[in-house]
Image 1 (tube, rainbow, N blue to C red):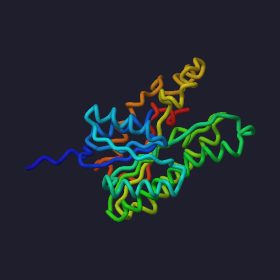
Image 2: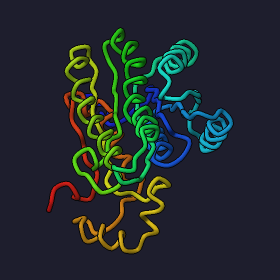
Image 3: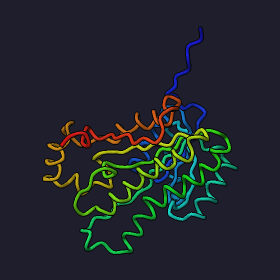
Image 4: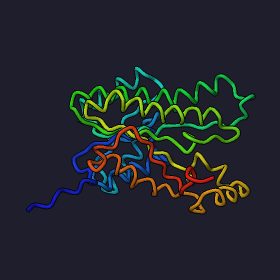
Length: 257
């Protein structure tokens, strides 16, 4: 009997990862590539995206880039159409692009609120809609929306960010409700506290780090590479009957009080 092919392998699959010129997005791109996928790097600035692609290719990774702002609906639609025509089908979409802005809620300006929501929430809608329209026609596809422990929990000075990530959780469920019948699997990956550029101020805050290590059952900050296994799982055939779920990779933070 022939052994069953490894259901966790992504050979022959093409993955678009938004906001992937650095940080978690770039790490996830490398992780998916390690499992066999070719990757499409996305950012708003061509020079940065092309530099990352060159670096990945030098590492032996099959990489292309697509430059667009996730917050601009028409720009996204045009870019996705170009990718599908010029590079081929997008089999896996990782909606990673996101921003943070810290301020107490009473001091948060409407402009900062709108800027954050346009990237963190509108961006997920814009890219998912454009990609899903192609996936639906093929009857298959994987979408992974990057949430956060703030999809469940709030902290002072980041209420709008928590609102955006809570909305991403519910949008993930809504995408499942609409698109699962077309053969798509849409799930969320929710990191806890990881040492990233976005969290640099918190990492350098000794008091916060002490609190976090005491609050997290694992007793430490996460390492971004520890997100890759969960992403590969959700992108793979191993997760073909997993849909509308949010997978928390947080060292146990959301499981305890």
